[in-house]
Image (cartoon, rainbow, N blue to C red; front, top):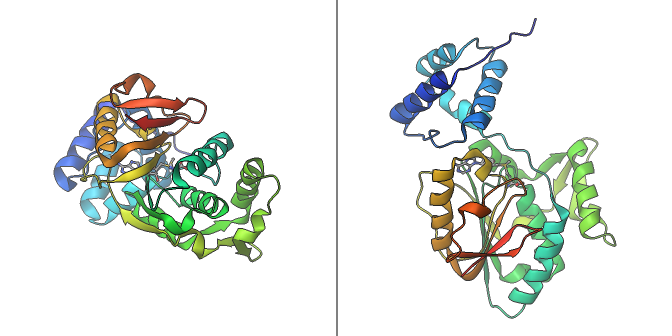
Length: 274
Ligand SMILES: C[S@@+](CC[C@H](N)C(=O)[O-])C[C@H]1O[C@@H](n2cnc3c(N)ncnc32)[C@H](O)[C@@H]1O
């Protein structure tokens, strides 16, 4: 029989406060509804009946916090997700970066790496790869390890291939991976320009000097105060004229300071640092 579990706002709020005090991990600025959904998912996954039982598990299993973090931040992603973005970004990259000597890129919240492989393919196809350097960060350590492996289930590859075909109808996606019966193994040279690192967008210092920051479908987790703080930090991280790309469901335009960012492509959600 499936248990029906729930969590009140008060329970969630006292849980996030306790996690902050005990581990220094800050979930207090996460968007409450999405955090609640994720905590209920964790309760079901570990067959826990209440937030109280969850906290008892935290106290009795010192390493449980890592599993909790990984489950809370499980991300939905796929290659060439939102094909219009990739088509428009390709045009912009060719125009802007052809004459540059180097291109520095930050994938913030890279999850299991699909976005990094996608951009690797774009860089290869536009002949910009040799001058690109990237960091790909996330606060989910499991996701980072998956990203480095670049091994994706064949079911996921159907969606990846379909998206790629919209982006580039005349090319063959299968030249970018090898496969066995169950999995595809992405060619490693697609990410040879990228270093994968742990980084928490809420608590860690931001690296500087980027031409392009992709932070797609990450802001959905955060409340407006955190979003504004992150936007200001991305602004400082970008070079003059650099691009910030957010996700299709990241409702942010109303929070963008028009002295700092200009929306240069509404359809693809590309902002440029002024
Ligand atoms: C839905 S995935 C997005 C993946 C990719 N950017 C894309 O759009 O395809 C969201 C990712 O944000 C990460 N994330 C959530 N909160 C974070 C934080 N405070 N710092 C860094 N990454 C975070 C999650 O771990 C997850 O991997």
